[in-house]
Length: 436
Image 1 (cartoon, rainbow, N blue to C red):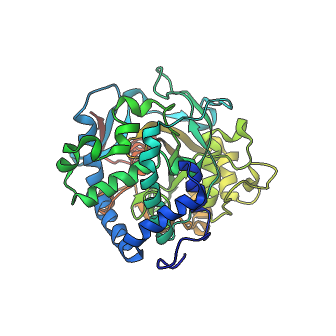
Image 2 (image 1 turned 90 degrees about the vertical axis):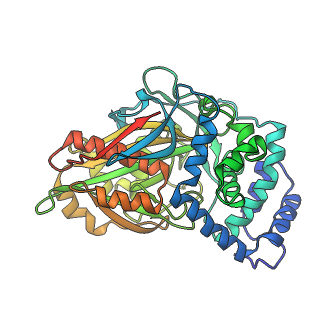
């Protein structure tokens, strides 16, 4: 990490890659970041980090998103709200009734790779507005020591809400191009809340001036499903539920507290696995399936496996199966596990797609055999375990501390599915959801 008192140099790839994403020469963008750093040095950046945590833990960003869109129109897409002991916990996830409460086996989920889907083109107005926000974000990520690198990721190529049945079509883009275009939407919301002392009414009264990037890119609920106007990147949150024998007689679900070094969702809780949907080798006919992203991330995030930063030199995308028996068990014993997609939505805060996935392992010997070698990755600064026998106290603590909406979308859907699969191990009487 460079000294904040020094001019911006070639200290890493963030500046160069961000410059390319917003269409500026590296020297010009570097100068823009240096100008930002004169106002927001490391001390101020740490203050911003703490103020962002307050926003996330108290849910100001959710209320802003709710009021921003509800003040405009009603459409088929509705806001996903968790019900916990009759308390409403709104999220930034928008979806439809036929995209939640699913139980689609992940291995056979219909998924396509569309190699020739055109890359989204941003308006001149959005490009102009994004440059100053991108400089602020590049400065912040650098001073926070966020680990960020560029690589391929899968973006939506077709509206995922068309038709009665879910059919996912993906094409290819790059992470940094997403992060410094559509990915700036969350930063804009957080900055606006902080600069307005979390006064949501004051922000909304400014309309386009309060959230100019959002007004250009996602001005309405309808625009959330328009995946051709932006890089609609995204991924999955997977709840891993492992059956335990006597005396627990439950499912144990690890939840991760996100590290301050990740690019999104810093310092809040999410599901066992939180991952971008992306290839490692470029074998898209295989890797475009969410199934393989789940197994790879299980290896990396739960078993401490080697994480590939950039393109892998491996010959096969499933190479880790021979190295990690805990993951190989899932692949080789499909009748002993439930691996399903439970819900699909768009996160209005980020403009990303989110897949709620459950991996339930029903044989208690899996816990006995593999739990002792499971560990957190660098993306988590803490792990806590939830028991399905009595999840409400921990859920209340998690919700009070702050949560990543993708993860809690998955967790709520996962707990309800576990109740269907095994009500003895997962009674869970006080949980539900609604769309409105």
